[in-house]
Length: 97
Image: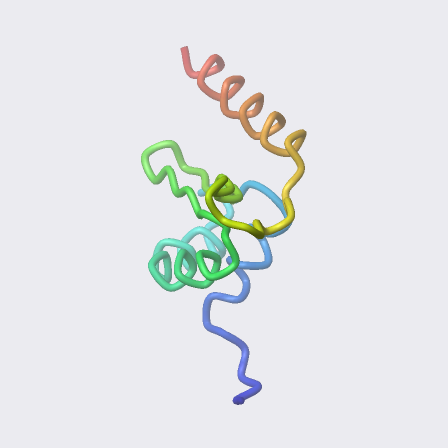
């Protein structure tokens, strides 16, 4: 396997750390340019990438587990993380009004 760094590695690492905002131009442009590849990268481990271009942010969310499967992936993102993301989004919507 080749040890070259993926061209979208910066965006992947930033997404793993939390919400990515469009004001971080370098990361945002990388995310938009390689959006399909990044989504495919995370999809393989059961994580969805949500990109809200019009709102200027992106975040990760683990896919819901399938009760029909014998073995589901363990949670990688805490529910509290999603609550914080929703709170930040709500505050940003409120401050725009």
